[in-house]
Length: 112
Image 1 (cartoon, rainbow, N blue to C red):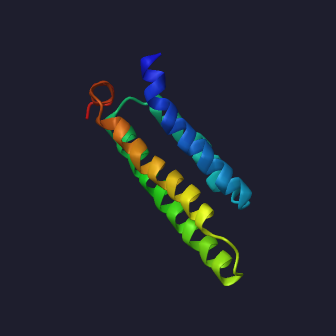
Image 2: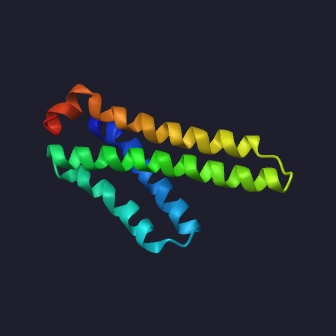
Protein backbone atom coordinates (compact mmCIF):
# COMPACT_ATOMS: atom_id res chain seq x y z
CA UNK A 1 0.00 0.00 0.00
CA UNK A 2 2.83 2.38 0.87
CA UNK A 3 4.54 1.79 -2.49
CA UNK A 4 1.24 2.32 -4.31
CA UNK A 5 0.93 5.77 -2.75
CA UNK A 6 4.41 6.59 -4.03
CA UNK A 7 3.70 5.57 -7.61
CA UNK A 8 0.16 7.04 -7.72
CA UNK A 9 1.38 10.58 -8.63
CA UNK A 10 3.41 9.10 -11.49
CA UNK A 11 0.38 7.28 -12.86
CA UNK A 12 -1.87 10.33 -12.47
CA UNK A 13 0.62 12.60 -14.25
CA UNK A 14 0.72 10.31 -17.27
CA UNK A 15 -3.06 9.85 -17.34
CA UNK A 16 -3.50 13.62 -17.28
CA UNK A 17 -0.95 13.92 -20.08
CA UNK A 18 -2.85 11.27 -22.05
CA UNK A 19 -6.05 13.30 -21.64
CA UNK A 20 -4.19 16.39 -22.84
CA UNK A 21 -2.95 14.59 -25.95
CA UNK A 22 -6.39 13.10 -26.51
CA UNK A 23 -7.94 16.57 -26.51
CA UNK A 24 -5.39 17.58 -29.15
CA UNK A 25 -6.19 14.46 -31.25
CA UNK A 26 -2.64 13.13 -30.92
CA UNK A 27 -3.54 9.45 -30.66
CA UNK A 28 0.00 8.03 -30.76
CA UNK A 29 1.21 10.31 -27.97
CA UNK A 30 -1.93 9.52 -26.01
CA UNK A 31 -1.27 5.79 -26.24
CA UNK A 32 2.40 6.27 -25.32
CA UNK A 33 1.35 8.33 -22.28
CA UNK A 34 -0.95 5.54 -21.16
CA UNK A 35 1.72 2.85 -21.64
CA UNK A 36 4.67 4.63 -19.98
CA UNK A 37 3.53 3.92 -16.39
CA UNK A 38 3.84 0.19 -17.14
CA UNK A 39 7.61 0.78 -16.95
CA UNK A 40 7.07 0.85 -13.18
CA UNK A 41 6.89 -2.97 -13.34
CA UNK A 42 10.37 -3.12 -14.88
CA UNK A 43 12.51 -2.67 -11.77
CA UNK A 44 15.75 -1.45 -13.31
CA UNK A 45 17.70 1.78 -13.31
CA UNK A 46 16.96 2.41 -16.99
CA UNK A 47 13.20 2.23 -16.34
CA UNK A 48 13.50 4.84 -13.60
CA UNK A 49 15.58 7.09 -15.86
CA UNK A 50 13.05 6.79 -18.68
CA UNK A 51 10.17 7.59 -16.32
CA UNK A 52 11.98 10.60 -14.86
CA UNK A 53 12.86 11.89 -18.32
CA UNK A 54 9.29 11.50 -19.49
CA UNK A 55 7.98 13.34 -16.42
CA UNK A 56 10.35 16.24 -17.11
CA UNK A 57 9.31 16.30 -20.77
CA UNK A 58 5.67 16.26 -19.68
CA UNK A 59 6.33 19.27 -17.45
CA UNK A 60 7.92 21.09 -20.36
CA UNK A 61 4.89 20.22 -22.51
CA UNK A 62 2.57 21.72 -19.89
CA UNK A 63 4.62 24.93 -19.82
CA UNK A 64 4.56 25.07 -23.63
CA UNK A 65 0.79 24.58 -23.58
CA UNK A 66 0.33 27.28 -20.94
CA UNK A 67 2.32 29.80 -22.96
CA UNK A 68 0.50 28.88 -26.17
CA UNK A 69 -3.01 29.24 -24.73
CA UNK A 70 -2.10 32.33 -22.69
CA UNK A 71 -0.88 34.07 -25.85
CA UNK A 72 -4.11 33.23 -27.65
CA UNK A 73 -6.17 34.56 -24.75
CA UNK A 74 -4.09 37.73 -24.49
CA UNK A 75 -4.48 38.37 -28.23
CA UNK A 76 -8.25 37.92 -27.90
CA UNK A 77 -8.28 40.14 -24.80
CA UNK A 78 -9.67 37.32 -22.67
CA UNK A 79 -8.65 36.51 -19.09
CA UNK A 80 -5.57 34.28 -19.03
CA UNK A 81 -4.24 34.32 -15.46
CA UNK A 82 -6.36 31.42 -14.18
CA UNK A 83 -5.31 29.30 -17.16
CA UNK A 84 -1.65 30.06 -16.47
CA UNK A 85 -2.01 29.20 -12.77
CA UNK A 86 -3.74 25.88 -13.46
CA UNK A 87 -1.35 24.73 -16.19
CA UNK A 88 1.64 26.03 -14.22
CA UNK A 89 0.50 23.96 -11.24
CA UNK A 90 0.22 20.87 -13.43
CA UNK A 91 3.74 21.50 -14.75
CA UNK A 92 5.11 21.87 -11.22
CA UNK A 93 3.33 18.64 -10.24
CA UNK A 94 5.10 16.82 -13.07
CA UNK A 95 8.48 18.20 -12.05
CA UNK A 96 7.83 17.40 -8.37
CA UNK A 97 6.79 13.85 -9.19
CA UNK A 98 10.35 13.18 -10.36
CA UNK A 99 11.35 13.52 -6.70
CA UNK A 100 9.44 10.31 -5.89
CA UNK A 101 12.46 8.47 -7.24
CA UNK A 102 14.65 10.15 -4.58
CA UNK A 103 12.92 8.28 -1.74
CA UNK A 104 14.79 5.47 -0.03
CA UNK A 105 12.36 2.71 -1.05
CA UNK A 106 12.28 3.79 -4.72
CA UNK A 107 16.08 3.99 -4.81
CA UNK A 108 16.25 0.46 -3.48
CA UNK A 109 13.55 -0.85 -5.80
CA UNK A 110 15.08 0.64 -8.97
CA UNK A 111 18.72 0.30 -7.89
CA UNK A 112 19.41 4.03 -8.14
